[in-house]
Length: 259
View 1 (cartoon, rainbow, N blue to C red):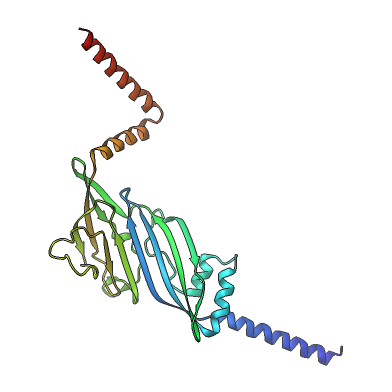
View 2: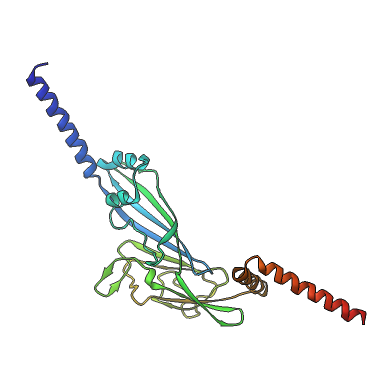
């Protein structure tokens, strides 16, 4: 092979590499919708799921499928591909998130483009603050510092094409909410009786977000919580203490009956 043919082959190879590299760099993924659902728990934590709807251009269909099956793509790599929407929008700066899972869904092809759904799920601590206001009645307040949405001139707000859902724990009784949710549209005047899920759409301000609710514990739950607290404080010694109390009661009952 002479030097001219070798040079030509090298030029072709470099050209193919350039075209391939440009194809990856120009992959077009556009987030068209973000749906974030925050399910509150009675232990002040929350389970969060975020579903992103991503439009994939015709020239990026192969790139998405390659990215999806790549085992070495980290979340930060996906963030560089998708953009700023791919981030945890509910996060406690002091404790972060845990139980994190990320699933890029299969590509749904149409005539000249495609759609994919990217799912993030994770848990966050201290999403609510709780205080006992009377026997067996606890009041929970949403901690709006966990919001991680974009900032505008008036403060933090929901971005375009974004929906925020908050699901209350079972047995919760709503006491205050602001801003008023976009859904459900009924129940404002009556305090949203029997409603456990509230939704806010794009543009809603979050800088003065307020959500409080009450939960009344059952007597059984109160007893369970008491013994759980005793065990947390005393460890295995708590069983010995409970056994001594039960034995003392049995002895007392026996002596009283034998008089």
